[in-house]
Amino acid sequence: MTATIIDGRALAQTLRQELKREINGLKEKGVTPGLAVIIVGQNPASVSYVKAKAKACQEIGIYSDILWLPEETTEKELLRHIEDLNQQEEIHGILVQLPLPPHISEKAVINTIAPEKDVDGFHPVNVGNLMIGDKGFIPCTPHGIIKMIESTGETLAGKHVVVIGRSNIVGKPMAMLCLREHATVTICHSRTRDLSRITNQADILVVACGSPQLIGREHVAEGAIVIDVGVNRTEAGKLVGDVRFEEVKDIARYLTPVPGGVGPMTITMLLFNTVEAAKLAAR
Ligand code: GUN
Image (cartoon, rainbow, N blue to C red; front, side):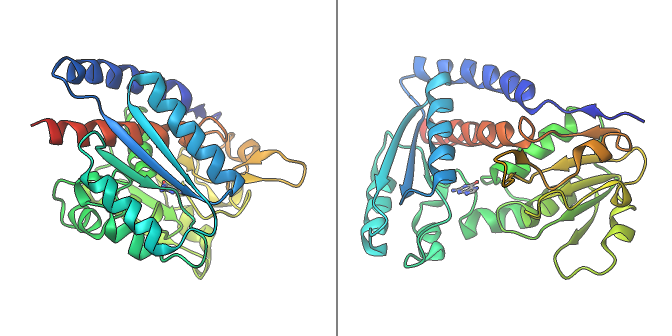
């Protein structure tokens, strides 16, 4: 079998056009969705993600404001910036780029963002709402993955989804979203024994462990849908995922590439959440 490649860039483009129409409608009512992005320090990957987010906002008519803070910013100063943004009416979404320097508590930062502006979906209120199936912001990467799976025409109900990785940003919310869609879900991680025995049972395999090219033909059942969340740079400077693309493309039915797979969809769902936040504020 040769896998159909799920083109994240094309799907992102389609969804962004829909969002643009919605934004134009909001603007006619006098509301321009606004996103504030805070970055502390100069982590090169974070700098490039933040620039990509601002560019995506600009392209579809979301107002964005990037706060570039120096590495030595104190936690107190950062929290004060967030509290300011919580009060600003033209800002509907607030995103603090992670990771933060070690002297700043991620938990304190996330807890300070007003839940109704938490477009990352990381605040405990939003995490809790996802857990109990209530309305709230859904973390962007898993939300984008659900859209990618749906784009194949497959439904999640009754399928066995195996998620590799248990991060708060991807693995755990991914599992909750699949459960909400009535899938049977298994979460694997670095201490999982006999990984390939479990992954071979997956109808849908979501790989988000951050181990370059860990997953190969021995892990994948014929006809599975394989979603590669990994973004790793090799010593030669090439971007690779957590999946050995060339091996798995001959076994899977659907496969996402790196780059051009999950990445563009993550940013798209951030735009989606920002528009949702603006709609809530416009009510
Ligand atoms: N760092 C890596 N991924 C993310 C994300 O989705 N949101 C934020 N805020 N930081 C990140």
